[in-house]
Image (tube, rainbow, N blue to C red):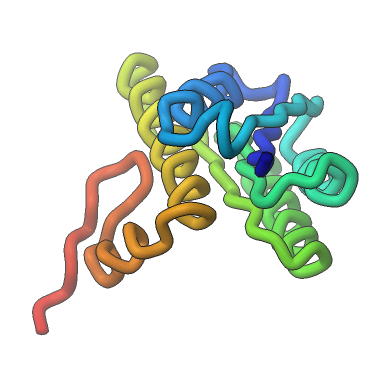
Amino acid sequence: MDRIGVVDTMFARIDMGSIAESRLAGMEGFGEHFEVVRRTVPGFKDLAVAARRLIEQESCEIVIACGMPGGAELDQVCAHEAAQGIMLAQVLTGRHILEVFVHSQEEPDPAKFAELCRNRVGSHAVNAYWLLYAPEELRKRAGQGIRQGGADAGPLPR
């Protein structure tokens, strides 16, 4: 049985890991062809090593790494460093690690922010599934300016 990893953080103000787990549990083949392995770490700078461990020690085919950087400049610097670590883990393992960061300053309204988070995490969970089982679904959407969790930009005129 394949394994899809989900790693999230205690720092996030929304249970991002549960959103990913729930979306994956609704996908075809859950429990028969794939299962979800979840880990939670303190903060987003811990995501890269947790994702790498899910791949190397837990045999995950792909990992969804969820984090919620705060709005301070220092938080943005740390988010960049965390993203660099996630990219390095992808290169070292040869596996996709989908970074799902929802920055606290993206939406000031708490209800809209929660919806943005649910949409982004859920969309990336579907992307992880498609990468493994239906890559043609991603190809259909190439060049469409689709954003995960926000308003789509749409394609540029030809």
